[in-house]
Length: 123
Image (cartoon, rainbow, N blue to C red):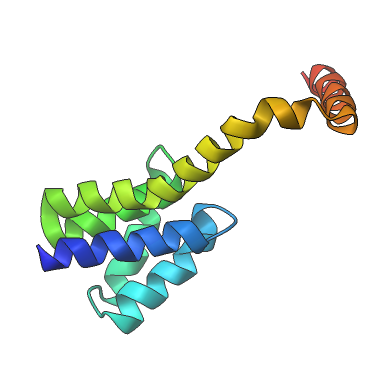
């Protein structure tokens, strides 16, 4: 149980403080799980990166699931995946609470109309 809690907290921190998506997380994951905690060997980590990139879905979620399963089985995979998703979900939820007010700003609505034109042009 302590191992699963440690996995959860580690992935929660990585999910909360990594900007740039799953590829930006790879260096943090390596530092945390290979160098600091020594839960994975370098070769195992490289295998994880290959699997996470080649399977469908976001690299961050695939990495969390793989590492969690490798370290603590199904429960570890579940908690690691949940932990890496919670910060992003929370940020998007908070943004959604204020999105209508944000869109009511004149310069923001003009910017979105310009973006719509660009998207239509690109399609």
